[in-house]
Length: 263
Image 1: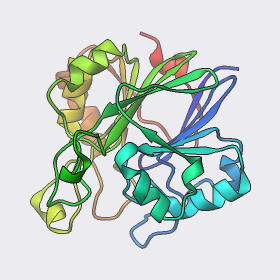
Image 2 (image 1 turned 180 degrees about the vertical axis):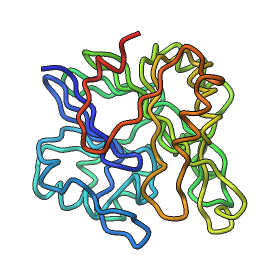
Image 3 (image 1 turned 135 degrees about the vertical axis):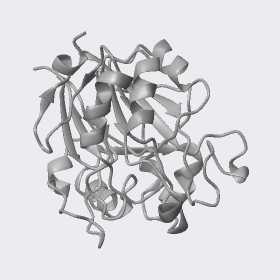
Image 4 (image 1 turned 135 degrees about the horizontal axis):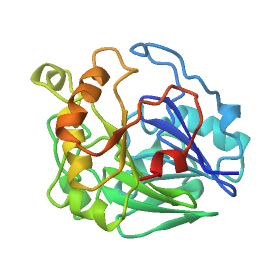
């Protein structure tokens, strides 16, 4: 068995290795702005060892669905940025099943090692864009994760803008495949308290500068009023990401990670 990556929409991905099952930012709950329902249900995530949430927004930390999953599966653990642990517990997730993640502190799960890395985001548009809130001290509230697997290194950026030193850090992690948001940001969305992300050009430039072989766009398809332009992403790639490969995944189509990571 090889490592398989499955996109479930928005920033949600499932990862299955020979020894481990993980999920990153699975968003299953109903929401009035969803353009389509979740293609997976709670029962489909049973047996998932780690459920990684990059930050506390509902489309990344789906507490209602995770509460139900933890009742169904007594082995699963939910990983959240350390400053967000109290928020996750307040949302009903059992504190004993929560793992507070911090950059520089790897988390082991079977044959996968999870390396938390900072992201540049915000809970609200008024506090964006930073690595955390003033009350967090020097802790990082918004994360991405580098997943070290038997078939390559995968970077899930979470919600982020580019920050100083990000490309260099990803080079040090020897990332093969990057999952990057491309929905961008603008004043109209920020006025609605929608905190933005990399746009298509910025995502391609980050992948280029970090020496990443393959980039997969995400966070562009699900929420009405906060979509991204995947056609622009592929159109800009030859100019902004020369020599790199763009892989636009179909939802629920399992893809061998080795095929994406091949240089």
